[in-house]
Structure formats: structure tokens, C-alpha cells
Image (cartoon, rainbow, N blue to C red):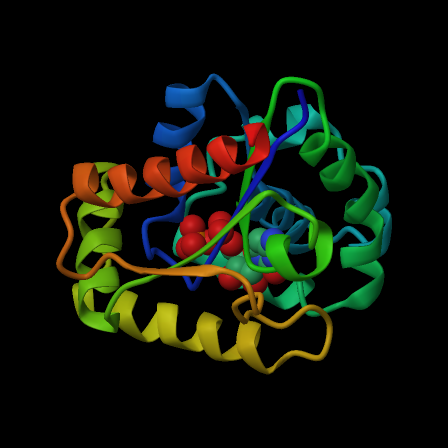
Length: 206
Ligand code: CDP
């Protein structure tokens, strides 16, 4: 059985939380594609060439502990604007998306570029203030010292870069289901995603 769930949206909108929960619920594999760009960005920050870093990316690179920081996020969004970097990461993401047993991929261009044929596409958003609040809670729990205002500025700068770039800009696929999580609990947001997938699975059986 091949079944792809594409989850896109701006920074800290809840894509990761929803993706992990959906993957666990349906026993699908999950790929956080932001980690690919964060890992490339981290290598570039250490002096590597961006394209060579993307071409040589290894799964073990995704396990490094420093990829969740705001600096790694900024480094990711800078290398993510380079078409050659994106191109080097396409094949891996596409084969992950079509693996046997089902897959959930979250990122910015999964429903538009990586997997336009995905069975379910979600575009997850939340207000800027709510996204900053959530990311602040997440980073503070790991000992981060940034204020909510600094995090808000960081998210907005990244979103602007991600939306305005020419290569695979952040935007909803025309057939994506929009999910605004500003007022939703995690359970409510996850349930909406699960409902959309179950509906599609039922259609597939008709
Ligand atoms: O977790 P958060 O939403 O803050 O970011 P992320 O998903 O880890 O992505 C980090 C950066 O990687 C984004 O700001 C994008 O510039 C880039 N990215 C991308 O261009 N395409 C993807 N499919 C995933 C991430």
C-alpha cells in the first residue's frame, strides 16, 4: 500500500506535531523534511559548500543535536532558497513519499513540488503570535534564552524568505485542505488531519 500525506505550512505552525501523531496513528513512516535543510545549513555554517553538503547528506547528519535552534532554522532557510540544493534532495524525498506502507512528509513544498500526487495534502497555519508562543515554549524547554519577540521576528523573517524565493516557494497546493490551528488544541488539530485521511482512504476503497 502506498499512501502519501503531504503537510506544508509556515514555521512553527504545528506541522511536526500533527505529522508525528498522524504517522503513529496510521503506522506510516514520517520524514521531517525541514531537518534535511537544517542539516545542510549546519554544514554550510561550518564551511561546507551548500551543494556538496546537500549531495553528500547522510541520515546520520539528521541526528545531530543542534538542528532545532533558531540559528539552524535561519541557516536552513538560506540554503533552501538555492535551486541546486533543493534539487539534490528531491530524489530521497520522493522515494520516501512512495515507500511501501504509507508516509507522512512535512515541509514547505511537499504538496506542490515533491509529491503533487499525494493522496492527502494539508496546509497548516496559525497566527504569528501563536506560532511564536509555541516555538518559545519549545525552545525554552530545551534551555533556549530567546524572548518571544525575538522568536517572532525570526519566524517572520524565515517565512518571508520562504514565500518570496523563486525555487519552490511556500504556498498551499491548490487542492490542499487548509488547517488553521490558532484556536485548536493539539488533539483537535490531529483529529481533523486523521478525519481527512480516513475520508480519502474510504474514497480509495469505493
Ligand atoms: O520547524 P519549522 O517549521 O520552524 O522549520 P522546518 O520545517 O524545520 O524548516 C526549516 C527551514 O527549511 C524552513 O524555513 C525552509 O526554509 C526550509 N524548508 C524548505 O525550504 N522546504 C522544506 N520542504 C522544508 C523546510
